[in-house]
Image 1 (tube, one colour):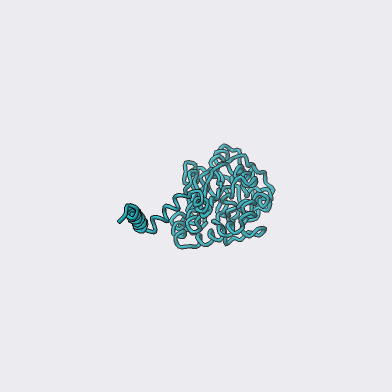
Image 2 (image 1 turned 60 degrees about the horizontal axis):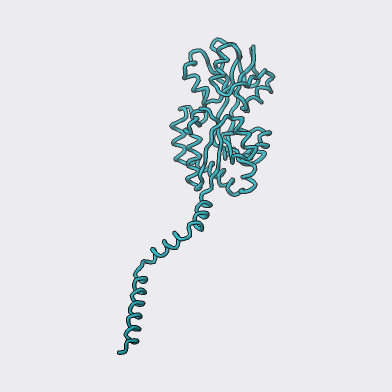
Length: 288
């Protein structure tokens, strides 16, 4: 054997060894290496798979629906919607008027929980548009009239009687439209229901219109011995997830997915159990 042929033989053996080493590398390891080599190509796909939807809510405790720190049935409902649809919700608490203003400016993707008012269609989109689809509501609640014990203020379901002052309501709440239609003076200078009760007990209000959850909390709290709720509710209405005009226009399929999922989850067994444990024994949405 010549020197040249010996050298060629060693080279061939070396190449065969390299080939054998490559063949011994598992296929999945090679695939993983190729994914790691191009993270910029993979991450946009992963990000697109889980959309983030920013929602604002009122910075107030409105039990059992929501609390300032992100607890309550509204959050449980949306958490289940997010799991079902693979959507990440980013919750932001703020005063209610600011929340609606942020929604109108498309600075957030949605707001909850919002009752229907015609002029709010300028702010965002309801499921069902001009005639909201109540089947896609987040929940039903009612407004209750609170008066001082011993007061003669009455509500017969059609008219208010013996009103000797203004009726208080929280700033930006839809019940103010109903109160004005009843030809009473409305004081909406308070952002919290406990502020309304303090005004009521100070003689600055004849009565206060508060949500059903707030009514239960107030009656069970330190003011409970001095106030009472009229037995007939002022009004009962559905509350919705209001989405921004921009989201509905640019991502109509995502909007439909969210609203459809709200209905499906709300009627599902898992959420019903949560709702049953949180709401009074009188039934869903039934307030004092």
